[in-house]
View 1 (cartoon, rainbow, N blue to C red):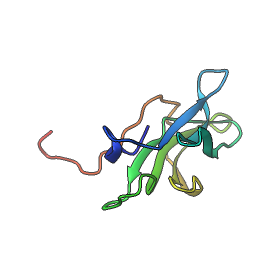
View 2: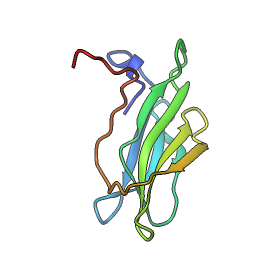
View 3: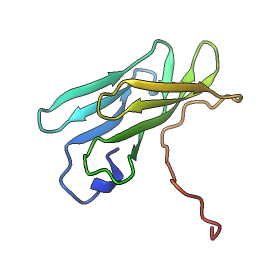
Length: 118
């Protein structure tokens, strides 16, 4: 995934799940296309994060100014949490455990507003 404000433009960063032998993701990565290196890594043992979603900071012009949002499934406890990372530093801002179990899912989306016209 990339910052949705950069779709169709030259962009530098990609945010993705890192594949594991069991076909789930075992980590999240920020890849810098200019340096062709991993610019950030989030990993916790025995977890399966879903696809990271970039949520841009309103009015920002910097490509990595925003947050990364994903659902993470803990394999041993069978619990799920919402994980929020700072997109620039790739450091954890917070995680919030959910009252329900959400197993690993490949794709995710973020909708900033809900339309009553759906």
